[in-house]
Length: 163
Image (cartoon, rainbow, N blue to C red; front, side, top):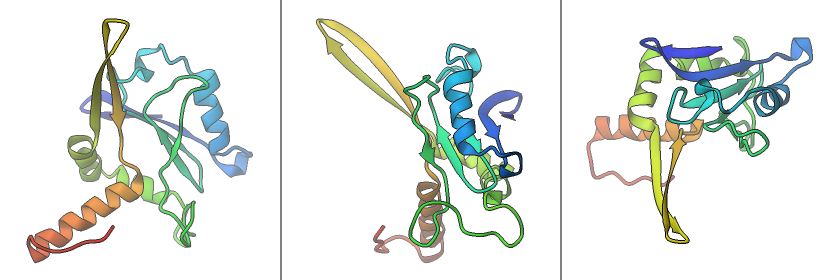
């Protein structure tokens, strides 16, 4: 699946479900082994910004498809001071992804305010190289910044927070 904004591809999604005996591990394997990172859709800074692997229980993200060097990070809510997602009596544990994160105002806010392109310049044997890396917020980072912003909006500046 591909998510578009005004016709531009911004995210790819590999959806799996445990009912067909597939999960996020299968989706990760597909991105690593079956997707060609040279395709424009998967090239960093050329098309999509982030790649999601999603099943009914968990979500992971990466900003760079790089075969075996691909690194997936969790994009879960956390449960009982640990990894994963809490039970959802109204549906799938990952429903927050499409009900909250991909909701249009939220998604545009993430793209406009939270995604960062880190640029580095380094020299090696007299040659200058430039390196760019997309940083996409993890769920807990996105959530805490939004909570802080809402609290500061309500109470004003000068508050103290421990995160």
